[in-house]
Image 1 (tube, rainbow, N blue to C red):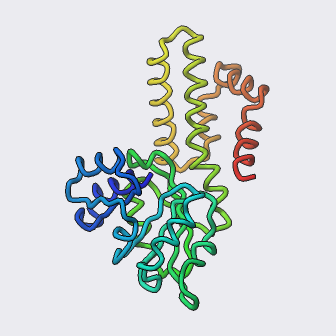
Image 2: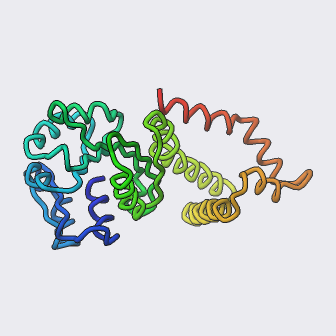
Image 3: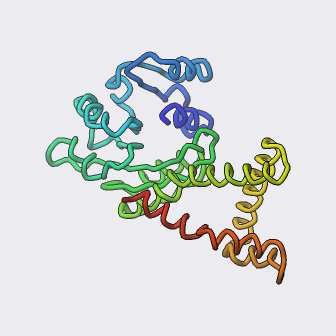
Length: 253
């Protein structure tokens, strides 16, 4: 995720490429790949080197590594001036604030992107504490170059996780199921997948362009006694809507 974010910032032009530094404790293939694509991006295995003096420190690690990394970089971070942006699932803003010296209220951000950030099509949720409108706008502007962003209250981050971060897997599962159905109907798997991808793209763009409730567009293709209403009713008899809602609810338990 961190590599995808660095690439997105570099492509966006929101910051000078040479002002970006990516750190990983291990000199792994990801750092080498970033250096090959963007030679001006700094890479290092020393987290403190990346964090010191940065306007924005983006922490994209596994949840169980967050405390270790934050304690490591805390001595070189000016919490009164630098923004801390966490891409770490399940870690509340209040916990991020705990790493600042007593009496300092750091500008901290909690972000939930999804894996489509790798192709510039993420849906990213942003919650903030102690941040100015200018700082929130700066973080939003950067991540809007990698998809769409929505600034929300922290209490809604669970819903954001279910709908977008987990949700992208649910969409993929629908594509897989529809592809398998297409094969059963006689299509080749690759052709069925291509049809479903274009259908999803078309449906999304149609809803974006019209602003309509999905039911309005559904009604346009469901004629009395027609094939579409038969298919929809068969899906509902097998629990389609209930399965989707219950899956989303299970994602935040």
